[in-house]
Length: 107
Length: 116
Image 1 (cartoon, each protein chain N blue to C red):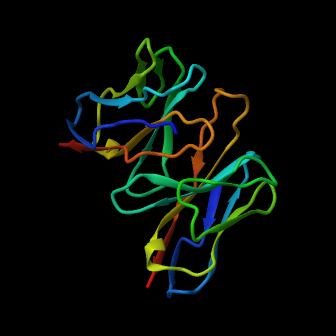
Image 2 (cartoon, one colour):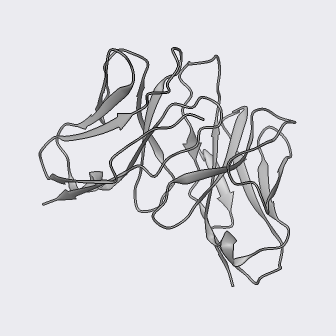
């Protein structure tokens, strides 16, 4: 089964960049990396995805290592509303989620 | 756009009672999923349906049954509820397309279930 490893928790100061790592050493060559976040026990929401190139959208940036075994989600200017649990995964069919990283943005 | 709609939002059951959680999506997605989330934990897959007419077990299927009624609807049934099934249940859908293509999952707001 595909497995990802993320730190359990992370604190970040408001206005600073938050860098969230994820290890996905079992990823296969054609699997994308996806990032989601879950705020206050709402349903998770999609943030960004990538295959091997770095990606950026209005919410975040995604940096994927050349060997594709890990990636980093970057929230460039964290706000209090970015406090959430962040999940990465890459399993294409069963799409289970690990425990994710609880990010707390502090004023 | 409604997206993924789950009903009910809250439910309290007594041990041994049965109930069905409903999920419907209006995005014409082929695949649908049921997850449970316990306090402080990630989402664990209960069952999924890769396409209309098919269902498969996920990580934690025991105590649950599912029905893919049509392309829009995917229901989760608890035949004899147990306190261990107290959890938040999320339904999700996506359109896998080709392997590796952009295929975002969309989640419902969840059903908060307590079994006493």
